[in-house]
Length: 550
RNA sequence: GCGCCCGUAGCUCAACCUGGAUAGAGCGUUGGCCUGCGGAGCCAAAGGCUACAGGUUCAAAUCCUGUCGGGCGCGCCA
Image (tube, rainbow, N blue to C red; front, side):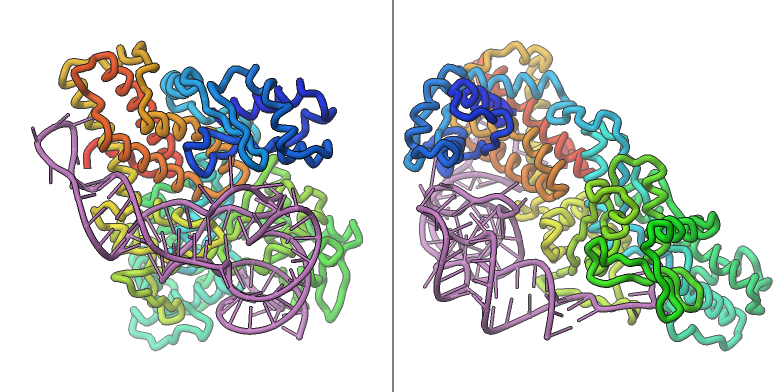
């Protein structure tokens, strides 16, 4: 909010300075100076304007200065070496932040920029042939937090999960369950070469035996279909349960098979054929994706007449478009990296415009315990599931830790640290800040202070450096929201919450809130109310609890 | 071989897209801080030729080229 105010002021000053006609579209930065001695905020506007008008930055800054001063937001404005302009904000501007937070409450920082526009976020979308892994967990949190954010910003958000319940891997899955099922009846049926060997397949077989007895013993087409459908259903149910424990709920579970049933894959093929983008080669049907930026053309129909996964995925995205989503975000794991090019080519070919779809790829997750990497091999059936991770570290720590790195960065998930009740554990650090503030408010009420009354306190009394730092940080929350909205990096929220917690703890150690000075106490309580508000807004975006006691 | 990504403090990472001030955090290390709102906390210090070499620029961790080192992709798999 402070940065917004400054941006507006600088823009206004540039306008009245009058040397560039396109002042309205001219863009510059508001930054935090390297040292707080230099100022509260700074702008590089003069450096950039210097280039435009062919003057030195210093000279431009000097010319701009009187106009900036007229804006009346700073008690002091300084021109630094090199042409940076530094602002020392007026106290009354800082006070505005606290008032805004306390009056807007959980709306603070969330303007309605979505205006009800429909956005779909598709994530996790794990194959229904095995339990969710820790990698799926990363995608789950990223998608869920982005969905939270977009929905707070006034978008109508739909969280969608795509179920790959079609194709050869599902057939292998069904046969694997059948093998386990037959084994339960003492038959020696081996699991197929490309089958699934994990113990969970046995559990599925047991479950199906309970439901249907021995009716499925001969491997007919019809019986295999039962294993397929029931197996997928049970698997999807278990995914659903795991995700709910993890705080993630989907609005729509979309089956790939529904596209095939409704001939949507065939229809999509026809759409591309009408555009002249389909050709035949080696007995297969190809999509000329190279015309749209892909590095090679792609097969849509194999020479045996079956559709590729890609063909179905094109139909899926066509379906998303026809459902009327203004914007779609797909969140994929690192193994799909090579898939982005062809998907985007498909989107362009279908004429949806590349702004419409955004594909986010996150990097691998590795688990670390006691400083040692936990090796996981899917083939051996030895891997830690998302369920086990949540069992071990809890929902809050799991969600928070998943967001400790940018999407681009591989994540080493430190399970030992995640459960540690110690200051070096970042999630406890942030939650503890919340608890501490809550404890202060509790203490105030115990002493008979009406918290409703502190809103009329005189905020001019908040003159300490730590108080100012805290207020500035609170004022940056809307900026953070804006940055996350455009960068699609939920990591930013985690980092901000850590910074805010740090500044609060810092303040807490230096100053008491509740003192004999009634006016000062009230002013500081008002600051605490604002801080706890913003902290809660952060944690609610992250889907992490804000405990009152720990 | 072709293509893409990465190389920043002892460790794990930000900042790179959109070039700007003294390259930031956390952990770890060292040294301090509890008679009052929760010490699950705070403060301070040390620690960097941003892999290397060129180039562009008034200005490069950031943009360009090359070298070295690491990872990934290059199926009519999903």
